[in-house]
Image 1 (cartoon, rainbow, N blue to C red):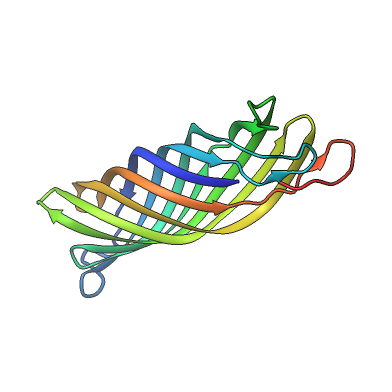
Image 2 (image 1 turned 135 degrees about the horizontal axis):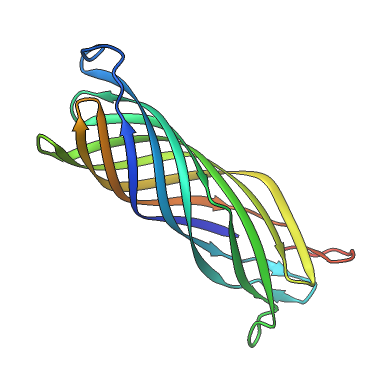
Length: 206
């Protein structure tokens, strides 16, 4: 199974907190941020189900939400870095099983996701109160998947995979120490393999 994440226009509240009245050193200051977002999640189902001698097929999108927390630092006027944790709303997907010529069985899959990312952002265009920024990050995703098509079932807990993201957004300075931003993000959470077994025993893989 491959899970890719598309974040639609998102509201993010960044509380830029300085630990003194002036930037701490050479234009550097710390910040904490909270994030609330909506996303469209795409799941690709693949592999082979030997119980029915058919490939697992199907791509499906679902919409959900996510919350996150960031701790980072601003360097100068245009560059910032942060470490961010994000927890995604649990989602359910339906994809085809026993496919040719048309699916006659369907996988019902439940997916739980969270990520830990190190990201960098650069402000491309600035005005006194607004800026357009781009960003990229790498990290890890933790995935839990359980799936069942009434013939075979399987689950995978604590699957850790390489994850990465890119984003584009708009900052708005509410005060000298608080910023609001909104943007779009694409996140790839990698692949998770689930071993499938016939319900009641036996062996099959997917």
